[in-house]
Length: 356
Image 1 (cartoon, rainbow, N blue to C red):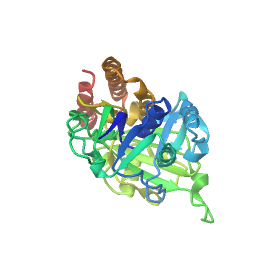
Image 2 (cartoon, helix red, strand yellow):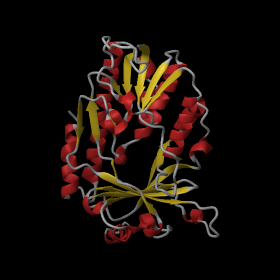
Image 3 (tube, rainbow, N blue to C red):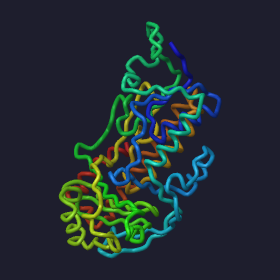
Image 4 (cartoon, one colour):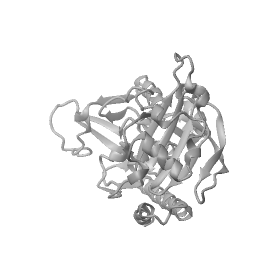
């Protein structure tokens, strides 16, 4: 049996950074468990998801050899356009952010992982069979048998080691529409991109848009009519709610590539056998989150969680962060133009549970 001080489950940005940082801090060899490598970057296929992150994150990534140009970072932004508590659009100052390509970040971190000899990588679904993790009575000479003093679960919303997961019975989903710059086209669409963040409330959710120099995202979030229907129907919804300004200056939504819907509403989990970090612990709502940056910050704490007291303190801070996030969401719902609609009220009732 192989023994490790730290094992990390999940090879998204949070899991990889947790393993890299732990190895750097002298806790190696570190075991990283994952089912498959990150998916390949596919802008035309709708996989080019953009994240708005604090500018300070670029400095952190540079420490690990990831240059901003590798992840699509361009200009910084300190203003957002929002239509939330009325039919009027207003410009709101925000902390300075930068837009990055999420898949490019995953690929860049993956390459750093492969170059780190202090990280042992187990790939394949078999490596994720964790029912015997931490039990010293594992028998046999199977080289895949292992024991870790500390198991870090960074498996995202799946939260594979969680003993309980709290999520809405009617989870909100996001539908991503992507338009990628095609430099081979005689009239590339790049000039149409609207890089700054736009957000508008809808009766059953919300819509937002943001871009990098290479990719434009328009994302519909919610349930019912906010996310269902064709591109034409969703564009008509924006017209009916006076939110068509979100697409102002952009091509018709029918020219975008539509990706698969994915759950994005608030979710949290608990585990008696591991320390959950990132979305595995608290999957934040886009409305009031810096989910990726918060997850990466937690990844940097892994190396300091060697004692039961340290883990208890860390989990208490996570609970406090969940309560603060839920409170911020409720404030936004109460100020929303459509906050009294059934979809918003149902969601608010669920969010209240996160404050306990």
